[in-house]
Amino acid sequence: MNKCIVIGGGFAGLTTAAYLVNKNIKVDLLEASPKLGGRAYSFLSKDGTTIIDNGQHILMGCYNETLRFMKMIGAKDNLIYQSELEINFLKEGFEQIKLKAASFPHPFNLLFGILNYKAIGFTDRLKILKFFFKMFSYSENELIRLTVEEWLRKEKQNSRINKALWEVIAVGALNTSIKKAAAKVFSDVLKEIFLNGKFASTIVLPKYGLTETYCDKAQAFIEKNGGRIYTSRTVTGLKIENEKIVEVQTDEGNINEFDCVVSAVPFYALQKIIPVSYLNKKPELRYSAILSVHLWLKKNPLQEEFYGLINSPLHWIFKKKTHLTLVISDADHLIEKNKEEIFNIVAKELRKFTGISENNITDYQVIKEKRATFVPAENIINSRPSVITGLENFFVAGDWVDTNLPSTIESAVKSGRLATDAIFHAKSCKFNYYNERKKNNVRKS
Ligand SMILES: Cc1cc2nc3c(=O)[nH]c(=O)nc-3n(C[C@H](O)[C@H](O)[C@H](O)COP(=O)(O)OP(=O)(O)OC[C@H]3O[C@@H](n4cnc5c(N)ncnc54)[C@H](O)[C@@H]3O)c2cc1C
Image (cartoon, rainbow, N blue to C red):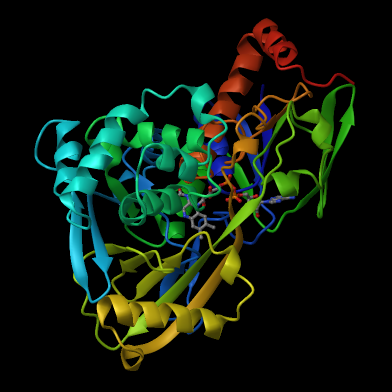
């Protein structure tokens, strides 16, 4: 395999391209938008003074694939790492409560952290611990038809506990409510976070705007290793002959010289360029919105890097050097509201929770991401396609392919790594590759 076309320059496409050039494969990456980053990028605020993200992105210590990718492209130091889990929660009236891992070996650090989490009474904390001891003994079959809410009810977690802990984790990690999220997905996420040592449960944040944090580094790494990146280049179709892609059609002409193609675009974009029957499964994805409001203040009284809000439509507040970023996840119910209405909602919550009044706000900018993530409901569990397709030189990546992870950076990066593994496998071990395709029951011509 000498040359590969990668379509899409989000986390999945950049990871794919980086792993390929690292193995001396020539890569042309085609990205429709004028910038890299897909759903995770930064840009200059409307008044031209501040770099802001399209939405705050939180990584975790358990993002092993992402951290490996960041290290490979030289962006490891562009992240801020916690030494142990610490989240500052807020109740109305600026009541601050820490969820902080204790200084004991794992997992006692977390268990004691929960015992000390004073957002709820001691009896409720014991109920959480009881659930913790039991949750990982559930089998896949037991979980597969339950929503998170049903699972929590079964395990006698009351609404106080849900609001102070489970809803915060579900909305933060899955961008959906406990009513919609599948218990199986939630259980997998909890295992990743809580069963993999002390570092896995820590929060990792970008140090700079997202573009500077990873897009620029990834681009430099890919280009230094011989890859080429074309932005503002939309792929409009893929021509297939004899079970192979033979032409990549773009808005600036067609490309015929390549050995393989990796699509790293969202599923809804893939459907426009190739029939989905070439995937080994057809996912039925529904999407969930995220709203971000960047606020500039005369004076910022907040001390902590970030806060999680308990029992508020506003979920997170992040303190940046120049401004605050406020996040509303699972925001479909607000997406049609105009920017002023959205600002009014967050300004009211900000005043209730932190005492910051509207007089202190000098400017704001609202960013709506309608299809921020897919909903990790029961119907997606067994319907995500693998990176291998029914075409021998075509692979798919993206947070939506079968990674066993929700719609996150980690899933996107893992998909890119899996796609490159499949390509290397196809090259060095064709026999196994063809067997794999048969096993996955992919379409023949
Ligand atoms: C506001 C917001 C907050 C989020 N917060 C978090 C978080 O805290 N933690 C977390 O882990 N995840 C978070 N996510 C999810 C995370 O951003 C995504 O899971 C991840 O970025 C998906 O990467 P991807 O490469 O799979 O897809 P994308 O980022 O969507 O990249 C796909 C790329 O393909 C390009 N493309 C599409 N069609 C074509 C075409 N025909 N030709 C060429 N190019 C094309 C697109 O322009 C895009 O650049 C958040 C998402 C949003 C929107």
